[in-house]
Length: 565
Image (spheres, rainbow, N blue to C red):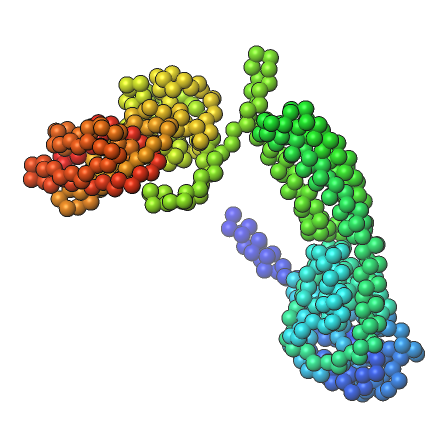
């Protein structure tokens, strides 16, 4: 078998890796009365190693532009009369014999080989099919006042810093797909055609450029030609229709969708408005929305077909975005209602339940978040062998001011709180006896605002304190808020607990340690005096702040049991 490997290695060694095809580069220089700078530009380009051909198109100059270009060593093609920049570029492109063509203005005073190479290199390496330049100077008046506003309106996906830059390069085969304008509109026309046809175009920063500033009359002419080019392209590719007709249809569709949402909201949440009114609003909105949505779809398809490369995604998203958001809102609203629908005894019942937005004005009570969204909670069956365990969502625990391992006594039976099962979300699992006592059934949905009502009169035993000493606080959870008092438990001059709740008038409360009674106190006239107790060799103090505030915790008579052992 070894001889097979020898033969295979010999054959592989004889295979030569194909070299990448050499790509020739032509540089076209359109020139009109540029005798002072054209030779300088040609001399710089001649030093660029990847350039194979330099063509100067003399666009009917009345000075010595052609002679200076020939002296510098460029191929010169002359127009008898001035035909415009676009015609000059097209003439050079048609006569160029290379694979890649770069277009460079003839009036650049500080052109360098690096600037030329940076234009051509991305095409040679396959990173782009067209490159256009930007350079370190403020954009011209025509760019900022004319080109950019119109492009942003009709072609919002085009976001080049200098869309009218005269320096660019492209593969010759790509330029065959592009229509050359005859005048100053040629630059922006190439940018738009490339975008619409899906041709990859890259903007290259070539640094600072110094060239002759155009007089105001020329800027006026340039602005006219740029506007004409953009508007012609907008008509050709259906962008006027997209902005005008489709924009109107989208606005009317949004009106219809808004009426549907308003009607549904009225039906389910505004009880003072008759059901029939809500239905009428929703039906009118549905008819309006469907009619104009169909028009949006038909016109959008028509515009899409006018774009050869189908490169409309960014523009479509920008134009259709408000409509998309309205549709998402309606879909979410309808899905919420469908999710709350039940079919029983021949009747369909839709009872939407919402989460509650909780905004805490005082976050001092161990609340990590001042704003949260909680519930609703769905009642589920307790897990097997958990007949004395309640699995409660963390949001519900926060609302009830409970925590894991707290004890909840319902109708005399004790249940230990535990967290929900991973990925179960807002499922509240209750043992069957607890569900019966609370009058709940599996599948019942409880809003966060009602969770306190559900557990009304439940007795809570919660462990408070620190790692060195803790205590069990006992209270009754009440759905009614009453005036409460805060207290601080201090043991051996160390603060152990700060809590609050309702102490009933003329009620006597006891405090224990290790289940042994150590003292009592009484609430008189809604005030409680500070208390001092002794347990074994420990000093125990209770300090009360008698400023009243509302609370749903009503302390039991034996409200605290300290745990020393």
